[in-house]
Image (cartoon, rainbow, N blue to C red; front, side):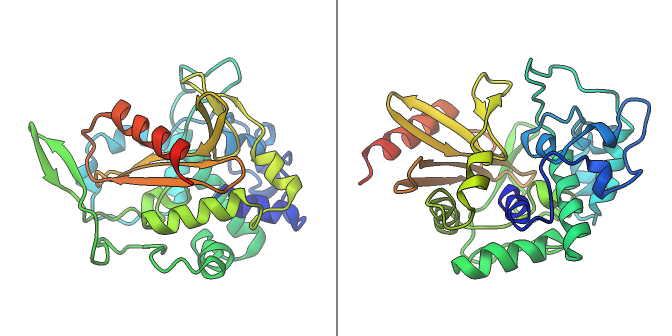
Length: 279
């Protein structure tokens, strides 16, 4: 998502420090939030001050909306009805899926095409990502697929099938481990962004874990001298994502995990060892 926005920045169609209101006039004007004071950069870096739409009471029972279709505007409106989030870092960081759904709406506005279409045109086709697609209202995964499990009444239950349309630009895209590795390698090798835009992506602030967060990317240096970038993710279906790619784009690791219950420290340790030792 951030890569598509930065490509449009390179084409002169979006400016990182333009306001959200510049592209979506009048959408954010409430007692607590003003789109004239929120920039595109802040959306991508989660420093906008907007709450996560998933914190709305509507989402307390995820199962109740498992098969429902949602438009990104619905999720934004849910977020705007919430009070300002607590727990922002001194840099203003607060992870909010609302930010990326808004960024997707901006992409739609400036290109005339939905974000899923732009991702297909700009990333999926050029990179030959055969296992990556925008699901829309599709609730199943093509076989072979990693099943997803969540804890329900003390047991792990298969929740693989899910309508993820609400996630939209903040996480609806379906991919494979191999395709994700291909994407990250291409991105960090400079094949997808011009040097100026890649440099913008790497400008970081401290996130809520005290680590460095750029424009849609996390910076890791858990092994001294080995700088890596990546991101993590989680879906209601129980699928989790962990990855890392070295600063030069020459080594990359992607792990897909089919359960919300696992030893995160052990997984991170595996990634660190692989990213250090792969040649």
